[in-house]
Length: 508
Image (cartoon, rainbow, N blue to C red; front, side):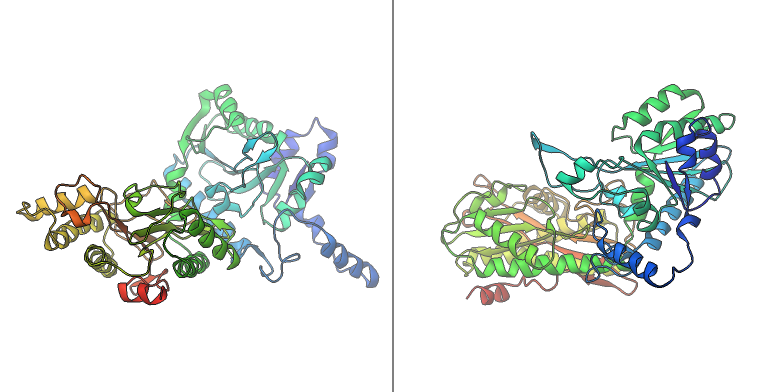
């Protein structure tokens, strides 16, 4: 069965595909069937009541008017914006393709993953699929096709067939009408029809050949089988770099979602600072930041947070979070939240007893000075790799002033010394994913709409001969999220204090 908004390509194609299947052919529906004249009197009222009573697989305007405006698929993002994203992607596909061949783009959703038996992990939608559709359902596929040499394209989603027994246990599922009217996709059909559809499209274009664009890092058995069977006329292409080149530039609505995500984690971190005290367990601080993030509107934390007391902060991705933090120790908390698909990523450090020691303050100021310099430097829109090089130079200089690496004579030696105590990049792209758009090169200049992190650190284990003993065991990182704008920069996590005086004031 297929539901259709546009008859241009798919209607004629599906007539060919289903000509031997009378049941499917008879049930084909065009969007014109949904564009009826207003119903008279009570019938119109009954239709409106039925719409209110209908249950949806995800929040929609009809069920969540406090959250979404009419036409929005997800908060702040209208279905027209999702359509524009698909259009831009297909324009990039067209430019990258041999114009003599047809194009077929396949993007699949995430599937449910189970921790044991029938107990699922919290479902998170595939980032690329979410970006193109706004659909939050598992086990769905989006296909987009264009004819050889054509700038026009069509989209179709394939969904699992509705199972009333599954809905009893898991709640409402997407149906064909939902895909058409809420998501704004031109076509919808059931998952079992993907292979026949692809085979028909390939057969229709067997003389010219077909580019099949997909994520080569994700297994999709149906697509693999079709490619192997029709290998002679098919060229497999990687869709991920094209998607990432779009996702790295955030629209106005995406920027606002990221502002909210960053504001939430900033506020939650302040509340976590306030409840800190000697002998608190790292897991309690984790619970605090997650509680306040959720209470302020986040769906969940964006990643397992780092809550590291004392020398555990030298483990850059420490996530055990199960030790007591002793009086006199610092705590490093790297946490972010997800707000309707968009993430924040922020790190703050503070003394668990509310008062920096002299050595803690010296090291902290050395790192903070570098971070403030790099944030200001973002106004010049440098590539991320240039930011990293500047971080090494500036951090090496600052650390030598407080006694690190006394034998380092040159700028290069100081930079190498800095890298030895901060062995990670100082920045990454941020968006739907925490480490967003991984195929986008770090050597390109920053552009308006990009969101990045700035996160210099200092990790001094107990064997660091280049460091004075008073700094041994100290781990620090200061991280903020930066939006590049047309006129400069916006620090999205600005509301969370990071100077020594501000932190000590909060914790009094």
